Amino acid sequence: MIRTRFAPSPTGYLHIGGARTALFSWAFARQNGGVFVLRIEDTDLERSTPESVQAILDSMDWLGLDYDEGPFYQMQRMDRYREVIRQLLDEGKAYYCYASKEELDALREEQRARGLKPRYDGRWRDSKATPPAGVKPVVRFKNPLDGTVLIDDLIKGRVVVQNGELDDLIIARADGTPTYNFCVVVDDWDMKITHVIRGDDHLNNTPRQINILKALGAPIPQYAHVPMILGHDGERLSKRHGAVSVLQYRDDGYLPQALLNYLARLGWAHGDEEVFDLRQFVEWFNWNGVSKSAAKFNPEKLVWLNQQYLKAADDQHLAELTRHFLAADCCDWDRGPDLKRVVALLKERVTTLEELADAAVYFYRPLDPHEDIKQQYFTPEVKPALSEAAQRLLEVEWDRHEISQALKAVAAAHKLKLGQVAMPLRVMITGETQTPPIDATIELIGREEVLRRMRHHLSHFPG
Image (cartoon, rainbow, N blue to C red; front, side, top):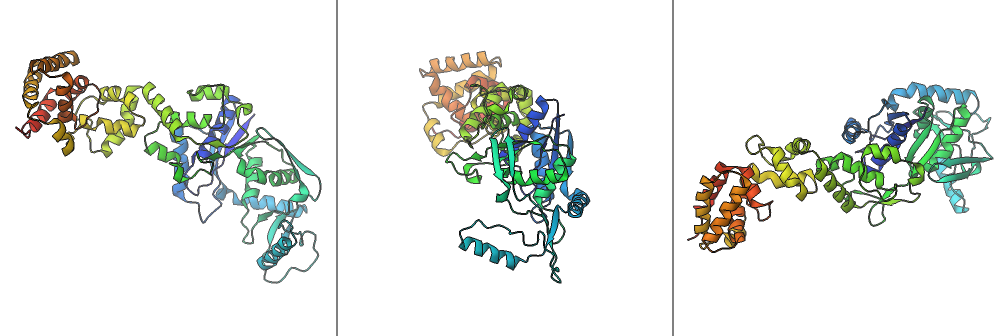
């Protein structure tokens, strides 16, 4: 059975590069009826935090990338790592190294001076020397001295690495804590991972990990190293390119389906398909569709995709998602029109839930227009028409068609164009100059509130 894993380090938020890796791992497992494992690699005690762990869990939950096993935590598996290190030592496949930091620094400087690649020279590999007193040794893995490591990567193709290029990796520090590269090997072995799908920044680690797996007699998983995501300028993606945290996109009002759709298309393609759901992605996913080169992040494309998903979304669902943003805008959606109807009116005009909430504010509390807008539209010439409009709206049957007819009649009676009445009316009622059609807006806000806002502004009109 195919078993994949996503193994983030909780040293900060879950970034979108990690989310894309999780998506590919999840999709491959789902496509093949396999198992998707979540593992938290929390051995970096100085930088790992409970808040970061929770951010990872919340991000996975928001994206809907459900895992079948886990989360497993490396810090809870220390006894197992030490057991395997002891096994390698007993079998002569690892050894204690007593070289001091000063010795190793001097070695590297000498190698650089000779134009050589800095690397450990194996001085304690088969040494019979008496260990120096008072020195706590590290444990190093005995990497093969000759031969090659072959990686038949599902994305990169065949990668060949000479063992002579690899030095003896530290697998346990002087304080006894195992290192990242070693913990990963034991975890993948114990969790029976068949496919390791991860960023290509880990490709350099893979030959070392394969050699440790071979030394343990463990099966070698297949590897797929996903190219990294760059900013639009070709530089490594960072905060200056915009939000890079999954939860920041949630907080900014993006839909998880849109973000997943965008991440799926970021370095992967199925013909010319742009908009597709997770079910389709799982069905279509294949390694041949993954680009071998880095993908460039395009925030405008993500905004466009989010807009498509908003337009197609169920109005009641959008209303529920929008409430949080309205509450932040000091709006009580229970004291105003049905939010579902407001959402239906506005959703084609916005690109995020945050924009949707911003556009809905005037339905739930009056907005005072800027002074320059008042001066432009609140004129003595239009006041009689607006006063008559208030009277007609007091008496008219309250539906969009009748409201529209009443406003047209007022404009005709005062020899004005409809816009000369509708625009100041829009500003009075909404505080904005751009809204959905004024008749639909008025209908939703409701007769009593519309008239209250009109009377307020008419009482302050010049002339």
